[in-house]
Each structure stands twice: as C-alpha cells, then as structure tokens.
Length: 502
Image (cartoon, rainbow, N blue to C red; front, side, top):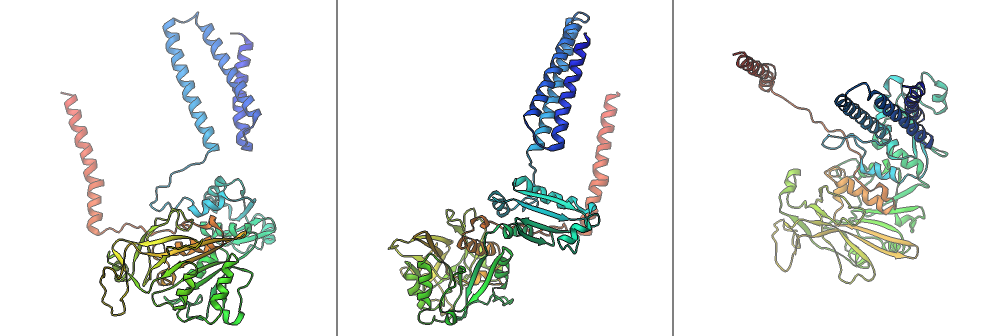
C-alpha cells in the first residue's frame, strides 16, 4: 500500500474526530462540521477500499468475503452508535415512570415556556457540590425553550456576584428578563414558573373581590374563608384587592376581573347596574351564587340570558359520601372541552349545595357555553327546604344539570366575559384542595385575565407512597428472596449437571 493511501486514511480519521470534538465544545453543528465529517468519511472509505483491493492478491476469495463482511458489519454498527450519540446530543427525551409524572414539567409550565417570547436568564446560587439536582430541573426548562438560559454561581467562590444580587442563602435563584428581576428562595417547578411569568408580564393584573353582601372573606383562614384560593392566585402573580361599591360607586380602571363569591344579601340600588355597565364595556366578572342567593341576582343574570335556579342540585351517585357529605354535594366529570377553562380537564370537581345555572333559549346575541354538568344520577330539586328530597317529574329538572356557564359577547375591540357558577363553596378553604376544585378556580381566573397560557393543571406535589410492611411480610420476603429463589437455582443447576454427566 502506498504511503499516500496511509496518509489519506489517517487524515480521514482525524477529520471525523475533529468534527465531533469541535461540536462537543461549542454545541453548535454548522456547515463546516458537515464538511469535515464527510471529508473524513470519504478518506476512511477510500483507505478501506484500497486496503482490500491490495490484499486481494494475498488472501483467498473466501477469506476476503468473510473479512469484508465482518469489517462492513463493524463499520455499520459503529456508524449507528455514532449517529445515535449525535442525535442524543441534539434531541432531549426521557421517560418518567412516576404515577403523577412528578419529574416531568407540568402542562402549565410547558405552555408558559412554549409561549415565551422574551429572553429569560436564571442565575442559580448553589454550592458546587449541590448543583446536580438543580441542574436537572433547569435543563428541563432550557430544553423546552431557546429563550431560557441559566448559569450556576458558587457564592463562596464569587461572593461579589452574590452581594450584587442580594443573595443571603444558598439555593436562591435570580430570574431576570430585561430590567425585571425576581428572587426564588426555593427551587420548585411552581416557584420557578411563577417567577418567569412575573418577570415577563408586561403589566400587573389586578383581581378585585366584591364585599358588602356577605361574600366569602379573602382573609379568612377558616373552612368558610377564601384565603387558600386568594393565596393560590397570588402565587401566579396576580394582585388581589377588595372592592366595596357602596363606598367607591364605580369599578376601577385597573380591574382585570371582578369576583363575586357567594353574596348573601341583596345589592344596593345601582350596584348591579354598575357591574352591568362594566361588562358592557368589555369587563370580566366571575359570579358564584348558592341555592339561597339574593333574588335580585336572578334579574341580573336574566339580562345576560341565564336563568339562576331556585333549587338545589341533588346527586344520588354516592360519591359525595367519600368526602363526608350527602347527596347535596354533586360530582362533576362532564365539562365543555372546547372552552379553554376546561379544555383537557379530566379531574373530578365537587360542589357543596349548588343550584342550577341554565342558558335561556333566546340568547339575544350572547354566546353561552355550558361549562359544568352534573351526572345522570342527579336532578335539580325545587322543594329542598324540608330536608326530604325526591325527584318529581315535571317539577324538578332531571340530570345532567348545568351548574356553570360562560357568557361572552364582543363590544367593539373588547369582549365581555361573565362566568356564573351555581356554587361558591367549592372554592372555600374547606373544599379548595379537593380533587380539581383549585385548578378549576385558577383556570377561570386566568381565562378572565386573558392569560390562557396559565390555564392547565398546576405543577405536581410529591405524594407519600411509602410501602408499609408488617413483620410477617418482611419475614416472608426474606425467605422468598434470600432462601427460596437461590435454593431453586441451585437445585435446577444440580439436576442439569447430573443429566449432562451421565
């Protein structure tokens, strides 16, 4: 073989390795990488061709055939391995076998990252020895969006950077987008996603809760209060305020959405007119009523072509008993999957003491969506005050019963949205964390705030799935694994050995 052929073969190998090493350094595959790789493969191929051409005179045809086959198979296997390694560096995928997909990003986080239009930088202040777990989390975010970048800083090695960002403890993250900065003291998916939302949001969204009519208090931490619900939307970086129309007489311009949570007494003259005027200008209102709601709300809802039932929804499926309640707590698994609030929503929700909320036949230009419907084993009971209920044909409304609607209508460039639920107790502290109640409430707020990227199932929490074993279980497992299985293997091996040596 000529010396030139050897040089070409060696140069081909060098070019191939140079292309791969160059890519591993800057993590960008460009045209010049392809040129080096193709040139290298051509050089290696030429060397192999010349080698076997010259060796053909010295070895038999059969030996050449077998040798060529083996060499070709080795080259093919190496090429497949190299391509798989190359693809794995450019495409990220892993399997999450946990029951609740604890180690995968939640749909909400994926939506936020997919819709990310601004560059977000995260500086993670961790000790060098404690960066591994945090890196796994941040890698998931960076793989999802090219606008998300991060770097680690050890506060012990770079104290000047830690002082610049006001870092007082290890494990803190500084999330930046332009001039905005948010510090995250504990790295969780929920905290990090909310920080990204806050620094990328153009302006603050304000949610007002109406007061003065016996509504649920947003500061009450008892089972009857709305503190948990308010804390949940505050974590999504909404500003929450109270509004008393008897004092202010108007709805502030800063109001993103108005929440009316279970009023008990009638409204003062002009209050409902103020709310209707706000809606007619493209406002957003979330009205939650109960079976004993003030009667002036019937007329208010009727103006938007919705009938509030003077009834109580009864569910005889027996599911409410699992939560210590009777048939007065209807179960809902049927949602409108075209509306963003309940799209892909497959979680049960519960409504203690709900009334029917039904669209009128004459919509008068309004688009009305029946968002929530109870099961077939339910009905809307008219005569519920006695405590004894039964379905009366022609008087009661047979299930499925609508207990939640969305009313929409365009007013110029703005669209009014009125969401009416026939229950306010589902979002109070005592029931807020039951099944999908919290997600439904938060999704509704996000829809009214015109932030559909936040409408989804929220990040998961770690579930306690420890295996508890009795002493008998431990002994049984010991005898099975340590004694029975090894003994069985020994017996089988002995039998096979004796048979082969007969």
